[in-house]
Image (cartoon, rainbow, N blue to C red; front, side, top):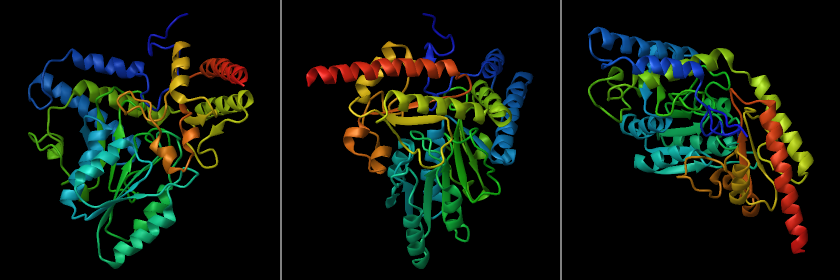
Length: 389
């Protein structure tokens, strides 16, 4: 059995955790690795590195619907979110944070570090945030003349549910509250224009769209310019210190350009549909989480009752199929999903949840392989259950 050189797996279906590096991004990075220098230096090598960074900044700005001066390169989307939340609380006179109950742990930890009172926006059983609850809370803060920060994700990383951002923007339109968007899973997968939006700051990630691991960006409006975390030596217009990695940023820029011009949402939606339909034929009692509402069609979070995810992941892995159990940012642990808990999913079913996610190099053969392995796993489970009875 041959392994794919890109992924080390015959069937890689974990793009929401990290997408394989695009060949064009790898090529751009290799060119930068051959240039010795500092992007802030004025000699020829420094200027070449600086030019690559600014080209990437242009690509990200175009893909995000903003101007280049609003793009701040960071080491990750986690860093960008922490800068926006912790730095934002310190610089914008925010006294309270309202954040989604299904947010990535990067947001949860940043909220904890911000040092102000906070409350979680409830998540409905559909996987959508409860906008009515948020509206009531915003009304209370308006009456009290209190300024709050609202932090929400564009797309849930586990279920691929698209959150009601437009409704949330409407709630904040005529206020001076701060709105932070975690766009790590939405950027490059759905159209969104930052500048005309009500969003004050937006975090994006390189490795979710085929760029390298270790680079992200915070896109900010002028009101958030003072939300700093690493002062440093004045890099990134004084908004994020530290010598920039021209190689990583160049790869990120190529990935952003590719996502902006070539993301094939229709093809990937067909792959997810194929996976979902095939799964339900194999296991009619399977649950697809978030199926009732809009999703990006890049992922499917599912559970087959009785098939514990920690055991299932081992079985898929032995067959060289890469899936995950929710977020991959939990130190390699398989634990119960806080997203499914927020959706009021019963513990017994949540313990069976797995996530399949597709991307730029996913194919129909990958889905067929997933279904073939799933059929074996389900049949084995049913056989064992019958023997036990």
